[in-house]
Image 1 (tube, helix red, strand yellow):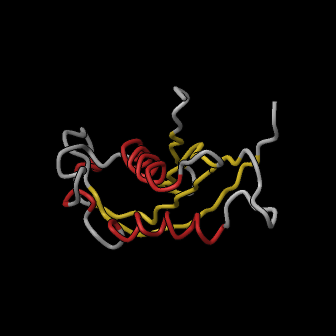
Image 2 (spheres, rainbow, N blue to C red):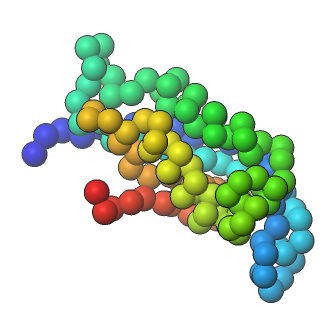
Image 3 (cartoon, rainbow, N blue to C red):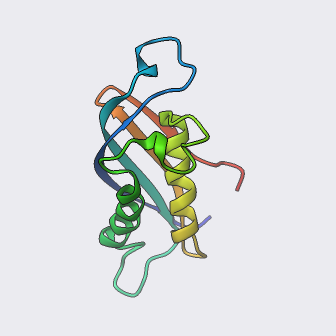
Length: 128
């Protein structure tokens, strides 16, 4: 069994959403200061001793954030059709980052979306 390195970044964005068919006040449009925590596993290091540069990981994450930041998430694909729950948003980031970053050396391990400082959802795909 080889060594694995887990590289993490934490960033944030602000956006509004409303939950369709929710039986409470969250069915009305409201905003959050979302936090996005990304974990990437590297199975080896590059020539300068990095699994992935924090800067590259943050840029890939911020590229996805740019689509949602200071917007009504319900208006943005795929959330115009699926509910913009923290669960669905974490899967959105996981899938988008996996497409951009996964290769023979690194893979996205998990994405945690913090809706508040006390409530989060962690998405990972253990089928691999």
